Length: 120
Image (cartoon, rainbow, N blue to C red; front, side, top):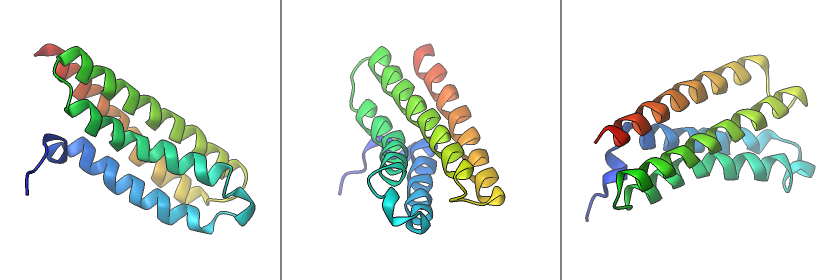
């Protein structure tokens, strides 16, 4: 089986694990949020890795960097959803801090990846 280049990216691997953890986290959200915050946070967290994968198939550095930027935007959107979940009492302070730290690390790696792509 072929290994695609995005699977080798540490940033994609971290995004993959982060998505998994978000999906586990939202299982405890209220049922009436299934089409609201639960859906939004699942989609934005999934988009982080999705954009990295899609961008890896692009030819030019500019196109690749654009998709890393989209991934970064999805991470920022996910931060907003984590803040909302915390404000609504769906996650604890400890969960909020843990997810924020993970997202901060991920956004830093995305910025570094984008800069690295544009240097080539």
